[in-house]
Image (cartoon, rainbow, N blue to C red; front, side):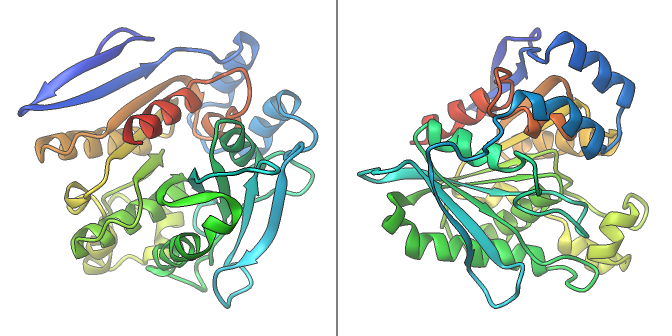
Length: 310
């Protein structure tokens, strides 16, 4: 790949694709503190760095429909965020939060997260949808994948009423949420379906065996080898009929780095190269907490991907 800040335009088996080292935009003092935190998943100390960079109201001047039910369970809910008086059919960005399969939510009390993703999306011409889903261990594999499918179905059937275009739905997930997105993509790909316009997976894992899973993955998938193979999305992603986006952070835990690179290599070998993004100076948590700030490391790549598809 090319130097930091430059996109390497590559041709693989006749297919043009883009591998991007996103320019280092993390403020110097924050970058130093992220390195001190290290290659771990650490929401509280990372939030302390980014809350001051976000607005106090996560949805300033926007119309929000909160806790809309897309299923019967208490956690099968979503928020729809749009600009007031929006007309026409805007593309839709559906965001799936992380939380290690056993925690997390679409909104964190007294916090801008993850309203910052929806706010940024609306400011850039989308209708934003933040969803949450059922958690392990009470709801093991494939509950998360199925919840994503149910939410997408709800969006397809209802988003026009909020100014969204059901034919231009982009599905984005982070961490465990990105694993659920990858599982959903693999499922619809195997069925030959194309219900979304594109999928974005930020710091995901794609291939599971008893030897490479953590307690978080074990809580959701279990440790049976056959079941883990069934839950692995890697071998099916290339069948997707829509474009894919794979990103990871420089300070991601090593398994996220290795599996992001593996996903890119596997997809390119199958002539289905994703937009592949390496986020300099960022950590597993900061990459998403920075969305909506002056740091556009990830957000500019999201725009490049979605506008290229549209």
